Amino acid sequence: MRRQLHGTCIAVEGDPAAVSAVAGLLGALPQGSGPPALRFLLRAGARARRPRLERAFFHGVVEGFLDGGDVLVWDGASLVRVRAGGGEIEVQVAPASLRERHVFTHVLMLLALVLAMRWRSVFHVHAAALVTGSGQGVLVAGGSGAGKSTLTLALLEAGCGYLGDDAVLARLREGEPEILALPRVFHVAPRTAAAFPRIGPLLGEILPSGEKRCLDPRRAWPGREAECAGSPEILLLPAVEDRPRSEAEPVGAAEGLGALIESSTHIVVDGLPGAAEHLEVLRAIADGARAYRVRLGRDLLDQPAATAARLVSAG
Image (tube, rainbow, N blue to C red; front, side, top):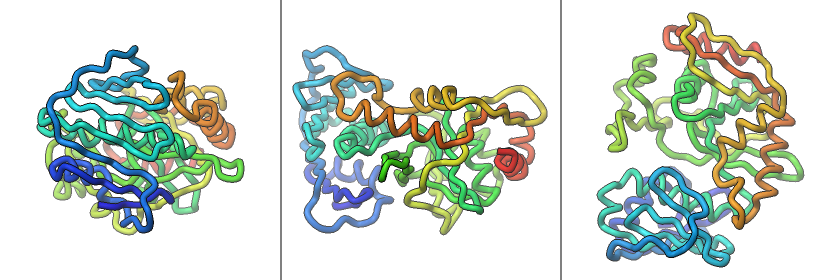
């Protein structure tokens, strides 16, 4: 399997079951052409032992370690080695990991991919990214339970295009920040789905990690996907509150930068490539955007599209 991610041709080779799992992460990307710049080398094997190294970072059940210039990632069963330079990702795939397919695909393999992209000066941001009908870029950053997904779907119903609902990439291009799509299915919680009856019939399987269900955005909002966008003009920082009406209040660039740092993977891990450049990208985004702390009320669930349109127009 070969796919293309913003100029990087990715080849996925090896154990068929593991290749199928990685296809769940990369399947929405366009076909790759030319010699691959990044290879996933997937080898079936026994359960891997925890590396005898000091832990450098963790992400849920996944632990990360630095081994010279390489980065190791371990989920308790499978071991990933992201080679220095970001050209190869070697994976010893244990059967236990494939039984936890969602974690293997959307945590372990996603983590390996975004680590490899750091050598290309392309950095992960845990945020939704959209484009309004007038062409304004909107970034929605927030942790679990902040209302990010509900606000994102409301903005889509209000007519926005999308780059992603939960994870995007960012880089500097000629000194200006650029947001890049990381195409994959959306994950929608039951309460969010209830606010959007139209998408109910389009929801897919329930994820093994909880109650969320898959949603292919290409079916729900055909023709609205975007591959890249320039520097976001609006940065929304949502928080769910028990109030009747949603409101947006402006905040400074420093608060916006702090939220972006919290929403970015591995920016403060010593030894990973591109830490200073990653921070520079986030600072450029925060400096160029109008940031708002958005207090989400019950109107977002009662009238999602109208409420989202009002919040963005106010910004």
